[in-house]
Amino acid sequence: MQKIKLSGSNKKLLSEFSENQKPNESCALLFGKDDIVLDLFLTENIEKSPVNFTISNEQLIEGYNMAEEKKMDVIGIFHSHPDSEAYPSNTDKKFMQTNPVVWIIYSGINKNFRAFFLESDIIEIPIEEYS
Image (cartoon, rainbow, N blue to C red; front, top):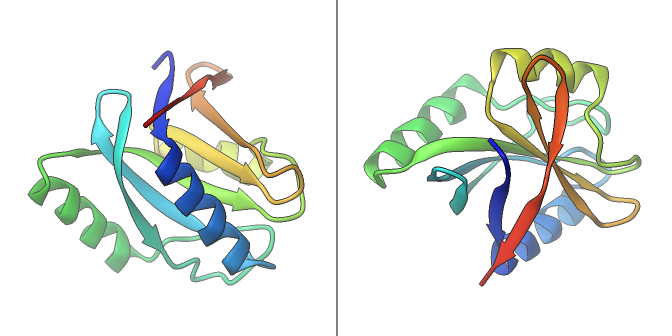
């Protein structure tokens, strides 16, 4: 994947959700087609941790079923880093191998979004904002 498209309204929703989940990481599934995020499924971080996140199997199944009903795919995983840069941690890198979709990370420090994709190495891809 070369880029990911995320609407301004979805960015706002994700940043507000992340700020409300502090001090813990927030997480969500991103639904869409190809490289365009069309809908969000805000999930619970069952670890309730400021440095890790886990989406329950029940919510993952619910999310995949919702995406199918909406005729979309799960094209990405979102989570926040409340107290650090928006860059994949070693734990993130490990889970990126088993979840080969775009990972969008929001930094609670500089309030920015960055997107990453794992090929043979971690590649940062641009986020294009659309309205």
